[in-house]
Image (cartoon, rainbow, N blue to C red; front, side, top):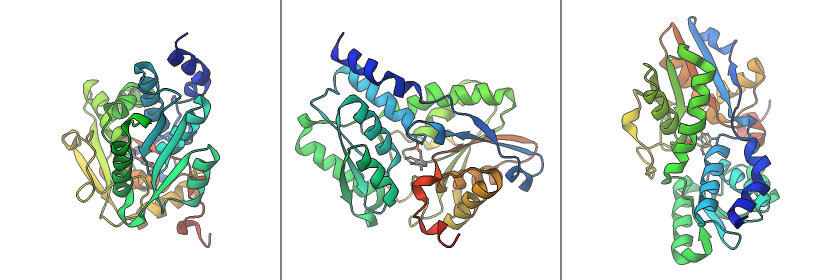
Length: 307
Ligand SMILES: Cc1ncc(COP(=O)(O)O)c(C=O)c1O
């Protein structure tokens, strides 16, 4: 067996748990807009607890296959947390060291999770957000390229391809021909771009809506305000029929409702997606959006204070 094949065999069971997540109907929240059926893909059901397990798995698998990732390399990337958790989890299973550039204001739970998996954290200026983490990862890589496997999730087509090959087909299978709208937030943009390309190619007449925070200073962890951020190389704005801007307070209020009314404890970007899904669709409509990650990793956030 080659070293890549043996590594893949070793990590296989963990990789096999990624994807095939349930599509959950939001029965109570959809009542805000009579005539709309609202469904959400439960990405928190992935083994690392988020949608980012899909691209991390794909980039690592291809890195092993090409030889770019080997046990002597350090896996390096910039992440607002969830891709990092996926890298750290898979890295631990593979016996590969993982170094992550993370803005210092990500929640304490995330930092603890990353360290629990054994990852080495390079904390970057919180005022620079995910852009500061991207700049630091580039700097580290350029200083010593031979030491690292740098998947660069913001510019790596395997990021959106993971969603094109898995999330998109799953949504088509689960929602069938009824689907009228697909709504997803933009971080690296991998989820939106990959699913949107797959839905376009499937020939249906689905409205594709991207979701962004409504300003540069926002509290929707995981999402980017593209007008003012470093724009990911994989982002293709021409795919979106609509681009919905969501206010942080509205996203927080919806995140609380998802917990209380649907029993779904999720992160704030999931709340933003649901706000946008309700805003974008005209009845009759069947809308699918994404619950990007679980809410446990945000429990120390101010939004849950006093609850
Ligand atoms: C919590 C959360 N929501 C949404 C996203 C956006 O996903 P994507 O990077 O596929 O655009 C991310 C990405 O990191 C995330 O961590």
